[in-house]
Image (cartoon, rainbow, N blue to C red):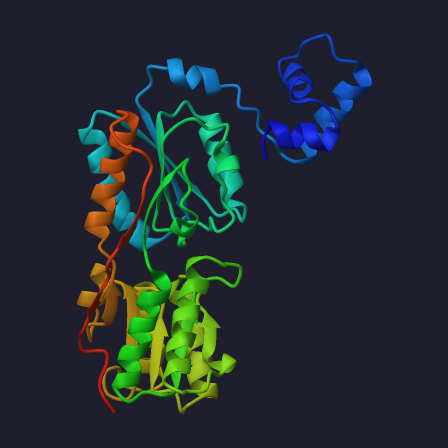
Length: 334
């Protein structure tokens, strides 16, 4: 939502909306009232700081994180914060669980006097350059859905090919003899990363002529507890399942604990595959096979690209990084 959208809804010119926002007297009361009501209804935040941002001497970098508690993001955040501080900037951190990721991003930028921003996580499938028209600062989207397909000009992104990575994980289980493979996704409302990884899972099953059972797909909300409860339920209802692929290591740990409590030994009676390559997947017993994301490189590149954009040395770019399947003790061939 920008000033042009407000003008279109109110059926007036952009200059009229601008005069209302700046409290100029040369707008009739009825028009002013209508515009203010539209602004309120659409939760529009006027970008009063667009000019100020260019003149500001602040050294603030905003970090917007999707999810209040996400251990994978926490590991990345530690590395990003060090890079920002070493460059002489101050980091302003904000967590959110809003469904409107684009609106939250734009609102955060407008409310703070930021010189740049890194957005960690979120669903930006519908993001367009028009959405970022009023926010004239460098933006780097990190670990989001495959926004790079759109080749946006007003932001940069660093991501992995989530569909391909999930395909690789599922194919690994299939090649080890598994046909009844459960899938733990994140949130039902996630149409970005979670959906892309689901597509990779389904594509692998289709390519190997394995029927897809929707009863094998559950949602763990990226939490230990939810993944534990849902895994226990699905294993009780579908005892033929021999492997579970969780799209995060956190949920893989929950699934492993559920399996153990049901008397099924992980790595022998059932195979567990995780995703992210977090430390916990290595130190859990048995250690969990996982698709490792290059978090160190992701963190380093996000800061490096943002700083170069601030210095005007590069144009916006979109980068795909490779993942690695790390074999451990939680999976076996049958």
